Length: 182
Image (tube, rainbow, N blue to C red):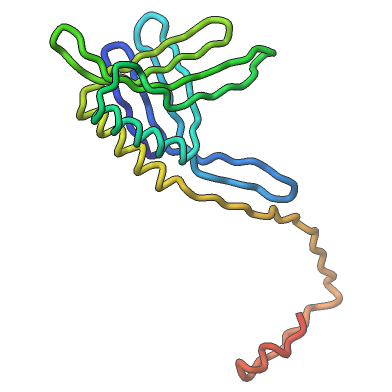
């Protein structure tokens, strides 16, 4: 599994390349994607996973570079995913930010999830870690940009009768290969 983990004091972010799959009729479709896992190591020990496609990961990479260059005053939203779980609407937002306080500055990746309650996980990182994460996201997004669709084979039962052995036809010349009845 390809990926990387960024650790802060009590939080972290794991970025992993994954394969997603879905059966559609007689076909099994597979494609590359990325999984972001935000986690807390302190008292709560929560972990929230966010799946993102390759275009979202590439955009995430570009937004990180823009935040480093422009140092905006407010966090910049990168991903917003909404789904239903147990009849409740769940919205997960991933943002990146530049911060400056008391003569210190840095960057952070923020996760907010609302499903009645609000969960926040803030992963502060250095400029070098932030830029590394940008390059990693870009690299994995390109590497995971693939898709396959394979028709599932239905196995047929083959029976042989011992009294009728199969015949073998000899081929003397390669040109004769097209004349063989299959």
